[in-house]
Image 1 (cartoon, rainbow, N blue to C red):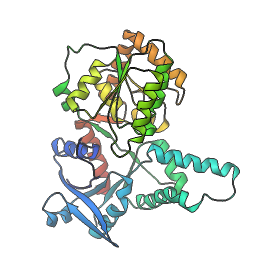
Image 2 (image 1 turned 180 degrees about the vertical axis):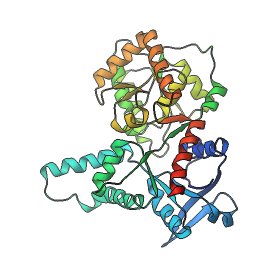
Image 3 (image 1 turned 30 degrees about the vertical axis):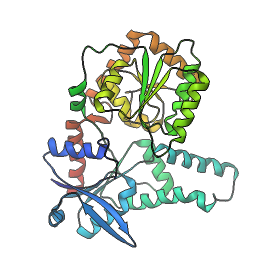
Length: 359
């Protein structure tokens, strides 16, 4: 199958999930992938291709748009070239919080939000109008589908769960069997505000003898959050180390050395921990549960006292950590969640693309 993929623009430091999907489809599915990065110049859409084979693009079997903000271009290209399209939609956490605030507004107010505050809402409506034009639709889970239907005011029809890829071979190359576990815990993610790293710091401060906490990751676009976290560490007198961005090899070692990790919002960190049979503590969020099922070790959202109790419990009970880690590993390996090793990821995506081609 020949597949046109609309690629997100990234900094290239790490292999993004769409690139992983493409590698899986080429390696295990035997598909030919044409990658497009689209641009808008003035009032016209233009496209840039990774390959110098523009004349072959018209022979593609299907177009895949893996993110909602590229749907307008992907749908346009689909219509112009008469190629079926698989489109995806999801509402990342900051957007979901805004939509919740819109709901709360209408409890007591009779006038709409100010126009400038509604820009986010209107952009999502625009994305959804194009999403409805896709031949096959993928979604993150039931929660996201409900929110989409609420925004658009209509049923969006049949949808399929978009799988999330995990490069197990990369971890196999770096993991070791003789790594000694330290009295430390970790987070490996870009420390944006909605990851709630501050909650972890506060929870650690409630403990008499908290373990060392290592935060790996950085957000160069917004240093304010990191500065606040560092200030908080000093004020609470915690043993916390900020190590910045790390290599894949360092990441595997850090997870193996740590008793457990945290990820209050995100699919990849709990999956990586599960593959190494390590617990990953997460706040319970409905969209995360839709994707990960019981892969993480859940704590009630925003309950910092319960988070502190969980940290203490897992830190002191090695057997419990082992049981939680092995349970997570079995869920991942047996495909009881929607993150998958690359071979299974390719199989699931291929089935979705075949549905579009047959329509």
